[in-house]
Image 1 (cartoon, rainbow, N blue to C red):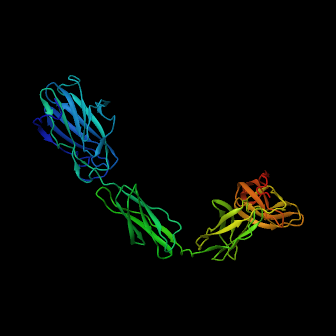
Image 2: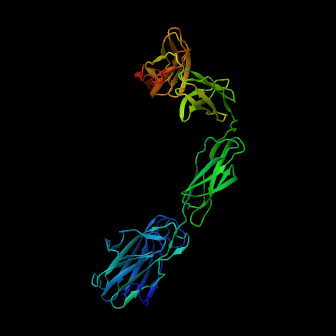
Image 3: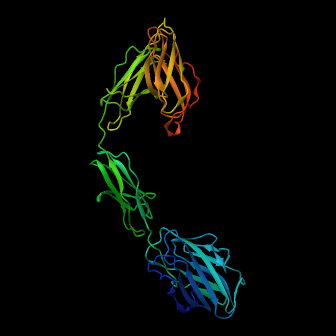
Length: 476
């Protein structure tokens, strides 16, 4: 016979919850308290127990049914455990008399076990226990009784499909938590993103944001996060909180205060490039950028296309200059970008230059860079030797793309500068000779290992010094 066949008459039905130590289904009592129901049917006393009558989303509950035979001999054929459709059967959890048992069918709202004709004999007083586990789903209704029951069939026309005998399960609302993520760089008049993280909520739920208790907007949850674009109108510290409201499936929660420091908006800047004329392959041409907000601080990066020529600190008069030695003739577009500094926004500009071919009758130069052992925070002298020695001109020294400084070539062909490394590790130091008169420009670079500062601030010798010249990178 089928478990889903014609319903038999049921006698002696009683459904109850144990008064001591168990929660009454539907009462909303917190904690993992079992609930129980008993009834009599077709010569069986049936006792059903749900391990937790008030579970939460994600909990695993155990449904246990004990059949005690109260009449003559009988063979059970099948048992179907009925559960709320919002719960999912845990694979491999089915047991008979505490031993794993094969599953015949897993449906959306039930699990069925079946046996052979003589596999489950039940003599008077015999007992069989059936056990199943389910995971509570997010779509379970909260705070209402969700029914469970058991259907069974066997020999002698036993086919019990009565519903509603319990016990009921009452899924509790999620306990939510809300937090606001730290915010940095907020400025008056500039939009900044506020982010609230919520556990226990669901996608589409609303989160409201407050500044010192005053509502400033709301966002909806997506993957546990709600955001709001907020434009502060006053500077100073702002007390930001986020509130997640009660929903049908989760309780409300409010974040701790996140203090957001809002500064005055940066003043704007403009960057201009002085006209570039007389550019020639192998000859130094000065690039000069002027930032409209005078004052020391920030850098200007000079580029041609995507190639960085140098990053130069801005002087107190708002100017940054670089000795550019073109390597190819033709039209060139120079870009100067001011990175900005505290209180001043960045800006950029471009200028066009036409580079002439290197003229005949010029003399090539060579540059030899010398860098000793180096350590963070320890000043050392780096120098470049120019040949021919009496040509004059200047040498620009760079740490990577950052200009260290510029020195004049003396009568012996030497130019020197003091350098105090700020960053440990492998660095590329370069010397770019400007050329002078009919003597063309040249350059050299070396790889230097910068040692870490000595603990306690006492510098040591450190470093491995120059790893050798990498050769002239500019020729005639």
